[in-house]
Image (cartoon, rainbow, N blue to C red):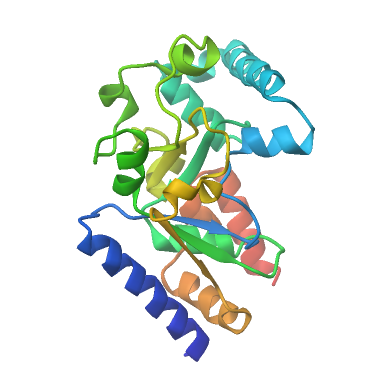
Length: 249
């Protein structure tokens, strides 16, 4: 096995043990195919890309939710709350203020290696430590049960101003993709800076780049553990991508 890959896994293991020693029993991972990408939700990535000010982006956020709910019709019959609809929007590619994380290292590694960039990176987050900063509680809320505000009230109608820093939360894993990916989210607060650019939060996460010469071993790791498009996206789209990628190598 490639020495760089072993060293990479050793570094990941070291960070996990460090977080566990601090009492963290749910560790979050996120994979980026580019080391320069920030920990930033797509809504704010689009804000910069299309040169929108904060007022414009808030209006767009409201319109995205309204249009999604209006046009989805009966496709939303099994989703009863605005939080559940927000999570569904994210998993279908709508720009939102939530950022995907996973409890599964293999899932994060898959996404880190799925792009065309040559600097794949893994972020590791202690959600309890993050929430101590943002939520003033060392716990990870289920938004349907543990938050005293709704997504609509806090962000679309702006009736409340719940917190500044990003908040880690565990959604009900009611969709096949959320369940398969062991998904979690961070919800952007009123501070719209990327999580990794907020100085007060630097103790909450670690960043580990995957060395170039370790990438072939990383791909072998994913194949060995059965992590692929179909295991990550357990639907017909995922199956189609998986069988195509297997046959056209």
